[in-house]
Image (cartoon, rainbow, N blue to C red):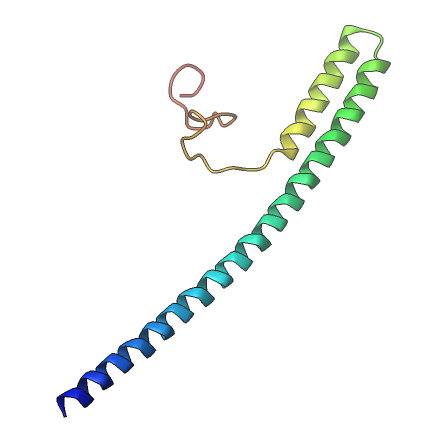
Length: 113
């Protein structure tokens, strides 16, 4: 009787082990599929942003090469700066980039009070 119970417990443990390993493997496969999908989406978005910036730089180059005076050059620089700011993604301030870059609202001190 004791031998039968030991075999039953051991068999149950083996079956349970295989079940747990199978679940862990399946979860890992799903995680890898989601990770590769995210990678493709991110890569596509990055390439789209690069193309938009290249197009903006081409326009800026044409504008600068066609200017005849300082005012025209300043106008090109201002319009290019505005266009590049539109292309920048809105990132949350997470402290990695050293403060409040580009966002002067809420700053204390001269000009920000």
